[in-house]
Image 1 (cartoon, one colour):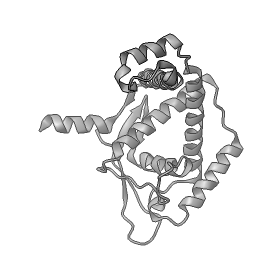
Image 2: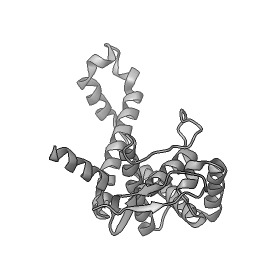
Image 3: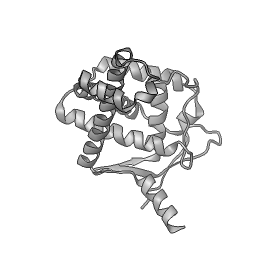
Image 4: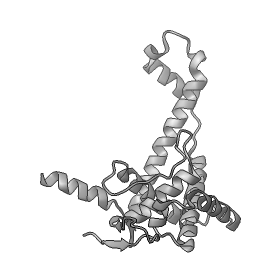
Length: 217
């Protein structure tokens, strides 16, 4: 069941009203599409990709990228909760304030951001959550990095010998070990994500609704 909330734009001009719909849930916390929109903007500002454009990352219900943004925010919420339960990956007040100032500078005067009506307290909460989640993921993945033996690397080489064009194993040994180590880390990280999503009872309501619509056709 959808929770429909209307958020009026800050501007007196005819700025479109932002309609917020529940798109996910973590335990008893409902995550709204407005929160996803805020999160998407902050991600682009605080953790920009090398090829990202300078403009704000605007995403709305019905956009192709909305599903990925919902998934990302739900994961961020559970990682933040997990970090809190372990009392690790603490973020300082100065780190939070520095990031808040960076966001405020980037969104100043932007109509899309103003339409989301983000209060200073809400902005600080979102920023702290993002920084904590990112720090905890780094902490967790560092503990998951394994050592790939020469025997494991050789087994991969033998199994995929055609890829190496007849060149000897020693030529590719280090690269193979790096590749296998990264592959193991990704698998362990995905498994950990699945465990904590079950632990905190995550629901992707947007995905459920989409699947229900497809099934009804």
